[in-house]
Length: 158
Image 1 (spheres, rainbow, N blue to C red):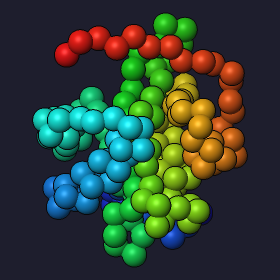
Image 2: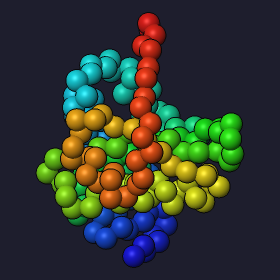
Image 3: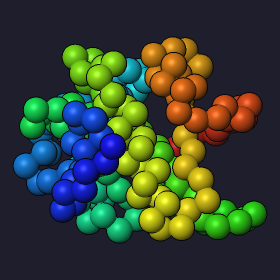
């Protein structure tokens, strides 16, 4: 059941909406936990640049998940062209505070991105995760189809 509130959607008991300027501190703490999970170390400038892009909301987008008014999760996503059909939406980051897991937060964030992408005519929403991320993969296996793709990458110097 989805109740539409201006710029806010409710998925079960989770409120999903754009990140407000007042969310900066809580979002950054969650994003740092996400970065730590993947054993990365990023400079403060990365957080500042990402936050500015999410507030601009033109090419990079973000939703926050709130339970009882507290920010407990986020997702970052963007649309890009697709050579074999309509544009697609890449869900780049998804994180839920460990204290709020198994309460539907991740599922609500994914559902909100799917709804957002449908409204913009995207042909699919897709994402990747690390093979060892068993908790997230349990959710992903329930809400999406695993197509068997393996990702390769080459790190470039900054």
